[in-house]
Length: 86
Image (cartoon, rainbow, N blue to C red):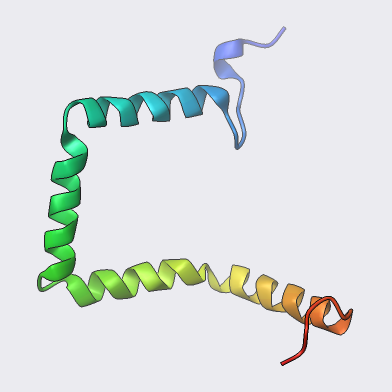
C-alpha cells in the first residue's frame, strides 16, 4: 500500500491548485495586490524599465529548444498545406 503523503502529483494537481488559489485570495484580502502592482509599475517606469521589458519579451519567446520545436511544427504544417505560405 502506498503512503498518500508521499505520492507525486503531476501538472494539474488539485491540491496544488487549491494552495495557489488560497494564497492568491489571502494576498487579495490583505491588499497586497495593489501594492505589488504599484511597485511593478514604478520598476518598469524607472531605471530598470528597459531591462525588465527586454526580459519579459525574452520569456515570451520561450526557450531555444521550444523555439526550434515550434519552427519544425510550423514548417511541417506549411509542407502539409495546413498553413498558408507567405
